Structures are given as C-alpha cells and as structure tokens.
Length: 297
Picture 1 (tube, one colour):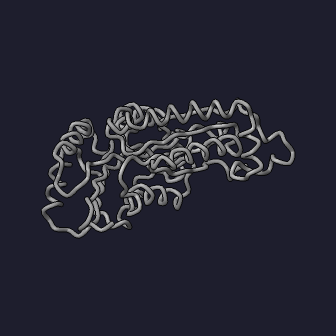
Picture 2 (spheres, one colour):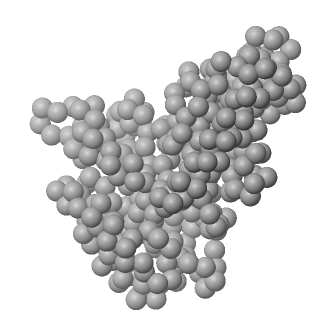
Picture 3 (tube, helix red, strand yellow):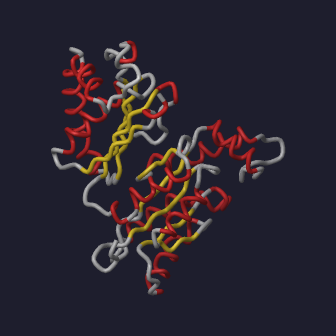
C-alpha cells in the first residue's frame, strides 16, 4: 500500500481471549502498521488523532481492545462509533477485526500455555469464563467488519488471512466476498455470515471412481452439476446472494463470508462454492474462495 496515494487503514482488533490477538498484532506490525495492544476503549479517538499528528511513517494503525481492560471495556461500542463518525481525514473508516475460536479449542490453548483467562475469578472455571466473554462480546461480533475463525488455522494460515484482507492487496474498492466450502463433520465456520447446506445433492463420495477426488476436479464437478437439483439450487442461491450484497453494502459491511457445507467438505460444497464464486466474479464482485476442509478428505 502506498500511503501517499491511498487512505491509511484503521483496524480495531478484538475478540475471544486465546483466539490469536497476539499473533494478529505481530502480523500487522509486519504489514507496516503502527500497533497498540490492550488500549482502554475511551482512548481510541485520542490515540488516532495523536498518531495522525505524530507523522509516524506507517501504512495503518492497528489497536487491540479486549476484556483485559476490565470495567473500561463496556465503553467499546460508544468509543468505536465516535471514532467512525469522526471520519479522520486521510484514513479509511475504522474497521473491527473480530477473532474467534470454538470453546474446545480455546480451552485447549489456555491449558497448553497455562495462561489465566482474564475473566477467571474465584469459584469460576475456564469454560464459564469463556461463556461470559462470549456474552460480553456478542454485540461487538455482530458489528464486526471481518470475523476470522482461528479454530482450524495454523499460524501461517492465520497470518495469510490477515494479509489477504488488510495487506496491500486487500486495499480494494467494494465489499470483499469470501465463499467458503466446509464439512459439517468438522463444524460450521464461526466467521460465516451466511450458511447454506447442500447435503441434499447427490454425493460423489459413494461413487468409487470419484470418492478420492475433490470438487476442484472436472469429473466431480460434472457429477454434482448433473444432479437435477443443482441447477434450481444455483439459480436461487445466486439470485439471493446478488440481491443481498447491496443491502449489506448499504449497512457499511466491508467483508461478507458465505459458507457452503456438505458432509465432509470435499465434493459437493467445493463444486457449489466454485460455481457461486464464478457467478459473482463475472459480475465484477471482489470474490475470494476458500476450501477449508477439502484437504482433510
């Protein structure tokens, strides 16, 4: 990103404790963002203005705000709305990046690192603390511009996700749409805005010559598209998505995640996700495709 030719980005990073905020802030540093960790929400606007006047040479500002600030965290949404309404000259609208992970994954991470959850108190276990934190963050997650589910992401995959959305190549016009194929047996993506189940389509898994292939290969694609139900499904799905996109854009949403699921995430969901992405791409939407569970078989 050339900071002289384009607006700098303001990113507020929040989300579940243990979901990867430390790795996220390090990744933003590598992207030449000026980074602040664990800032009380009511200092957001002051910090942005101070940083703007400082003349620091950076491509953006990334700030971590989470429940570690204790009672101050209750001011998050008010502080964020004040920041976005300020419309700081030379900077894009502040965006919320929300990091999430499943409860079992969060519990495992805390046990492995032996860290204490910030909401753990006497008589309260880690699972109760995680549930309380989810309740506190529910409204913020709903308002987030981008949610990243780190449950199944290796560190490099996580860094790649951040670079994809907030690096130089992420500075594009219009809403960024990610179409994700997944397998229900591995869980629904926590970062999905829209979820569609295609398990009613004919399953190539039960065809011996197709079972070990995946939906990226022409034989499987042809099999799935030959199902009499696939064409009416795609017509309705594409129509619904194309109708919905402008409505999300009116709400100011910068990123939209559409999840397409089948049993294992290897055949039907991959084909449908690819077809949907192709449909949107030829209509000049900014589309990314991710096949989350395809490599798992």
